[in-house]
Length: 543
Image (cartoon, rainbow, N blue to C red):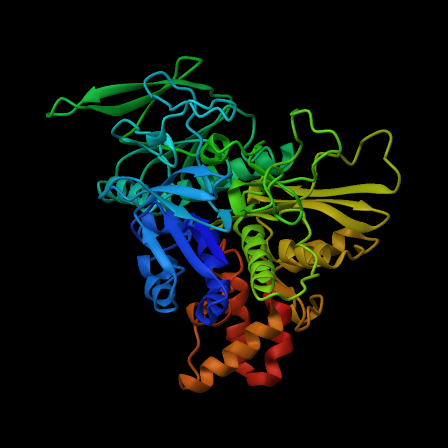
């Protein structure tokens, strides 16, 4: 079976790795085409790399030699600029020769997403409407050319621009108050840069947090050295000219007349799926490439999509081309789960085996903001208020706030079972709530008992007993028991020394969003202190 993977980012690379046994056996002839000239790396940690907190080798996810030695045809620095689904061919442009066609039996789109470029006077954008079929091929898979001093933060080229600004200690302006923008702002402030976050809403992270959590987070950001300018709708940029005559960003101009000056403008305004290639091929697209639960295109059974470019939805009985609800998850964990499942399916089909494992279920996304002394975790709809006059069914809402010290917790339950929560500045309480949410467990009748986990006199031994089966790394589905087993094995090989990076190499835990690395370290600390006898206590501390 000739399988062509379009995209060599984290999700495309994961699919390729899971297909390696079939490639080695000859059951699958695998070709991977990636636009960047380097192997896959973790985009979630690009901001940390940009400020020098994480070296490049620690964010790399794949060794290109491992793929090529297994017989994979890996073509980096090349783009697929056209797909003919009738002939099952893809047109590839590697920049060195004339574009050429490659045949396939199955094609998997793992093209990911690109940074949204907001409408700003002085910043040009490429029109990529999914309904347009006249998009020129040079725009397929390419990113917008931004003015000097303006960047997104999605790839290593963006990271290099940010690193230069951080080295110069430039004043950095961040447009957008989502998770990634705020994490970068905190990192830049910690690195010594004056940092300003501009956003048009009332509070940061409005899609994940209610007003109380958002206001508490904003206060915590300011305490960490990040200036926050809410209610500021950006309209244009002002430029100055360098000695070579080229325009460079000077200030962000808002609708109310503010000129927010800086040496670098970082656009963090969300992302949009890269669907132009699929649209040009005549495939049905919504907010991403439309695929059913089996990750198969609505338009062609030989086409699949995974990751940030995949809009998973069941096709209606009568599809009239209207708006389809939902969209890509935008998180690396679900993309990896899709890659693992699709690799199993393709391998089984290539080998002539029956495959009946169900596709991965859609789960509510747990959003984590990680920063120095600023932590925030949220999942589900936390908009209900405790004083709502007419509670719905068995819904109950509880909240506690201490804005002066940057602490806030809100829980939403249905007949006692936790369905949503937001926690700011309460890391251990958030970890406990995450565990209860994962289990679908009930909260104590006295909700205030949850607050004790972040008390100064809290005894970690009193935490909920997670046990070996508890999920520690949600991105990769790695349990506490598997981490402990890997730590013991690595320790035996390395004279008792095991690091979080070692656990990542052995199990992939901690290589996704990075939010679980502290919990992994807690398990390692417990093992180092008490050996295997202390494993269960370590697991309790970690979650």
